[in-house]
Image 1 (cartoon, rainbow, N blue to C red):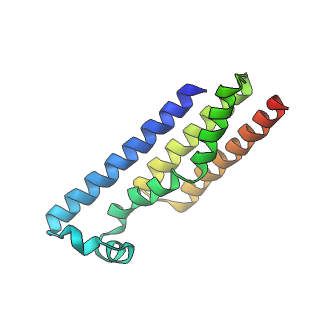
Image 2 (image 1 turned 90 degrees about the vertical axis):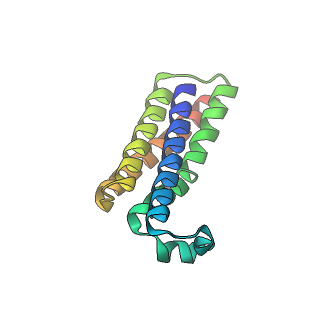
Image 3 (image 1 turned 45 degrees about the vertical axis):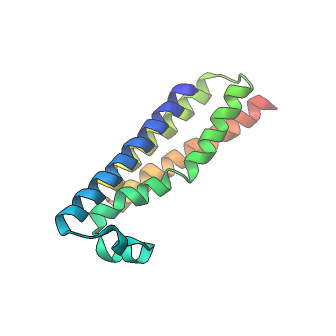
Length: 135
């Protein structure tokens, strides 16, 4: 259960780097002083969607993945391991990688929603399986 958690950490780090790289490059090219993006409203007004998407995705990585981290921590603490937990955990992580890739690049909402939905169902399956094993 530790390996999927580490991959999620890596995904979060990569999206965070991408956010800063896009934002910094755009702001330097357009000569935007950092104070001009002091509020969320000014940020949205000054930066194009392609620059904002990694930040939006980074916020997404602190929503459902928090439940994933908690479930994995519980599984590790209680020494609960089985094939289904691993399959569900890796499925969730793969879904989040696909979701992030779509969100940060082409941003096709139907494809992004499919990846999100699949990963969410796998996460709830993981939580239910964990509850079953812990009972």
